[in-house]
Length: 312
Image (cartoon, rainbow, N blue to C red; front, side, top):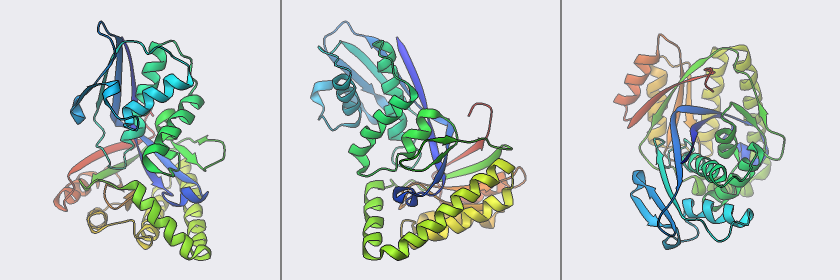
């Protein structure tokens, strides 16, 4: 039996602007994770069990574009694995689907590593990251690449598309509350809608993306130095730009407002928007009040995560 696990992720700054070459910051969320288990099977075929999504099927009964099937077919094609071995594959995940926490990337990374290890196929982190990015394209159209990067390396990442990956050090641990609207986040549609805005007025939106890029750069410095008040202000500023892009929503804005009113240092939506999650920066004194306020404002799930823990 071979197993592998991959964490969730949250984007702290720079979503959407990252698609246009500006930097973004993202961190792993180790409180939630996807787990893949691979073992040899006595029966012919590749049998898949993913109880969280009620999937119990043989590989060839699934369409080639199915997220799990795509990983297996693509990996076997690239590594010239033929004929297919007989395997039992089980996938479990505690990451909410379509919530902006990187569920798809985490499943792909965990499954890729478990399969590669089980079949004695050597893959570096760089190769896993590049491979999962291609899988992400199937589901998100023009993904930024940030999900697969953070999940693969399981470290805080300062990410600029087309440039070398930069991981960075968190000066002092800080706490973020993640609030889930319970509404699936239509990432592909949101990315497409922002592209239409950009195409209609490129000079204006390039200026906005520049400002978001400066926010991400400044936020990295604040995280490295432990300047939490600055970080909170930057979150609020970034959220206003995302509202202007029309990728926030009434539900996200309601949770942001609830967090701020309860004492959060800053709050913003995280990820593609139109649903999914928002995040709030808190300290030890405000964490409980912010969590309670977000639940009362309609958060379907709340996760407290400390960024900069030794396990990140």
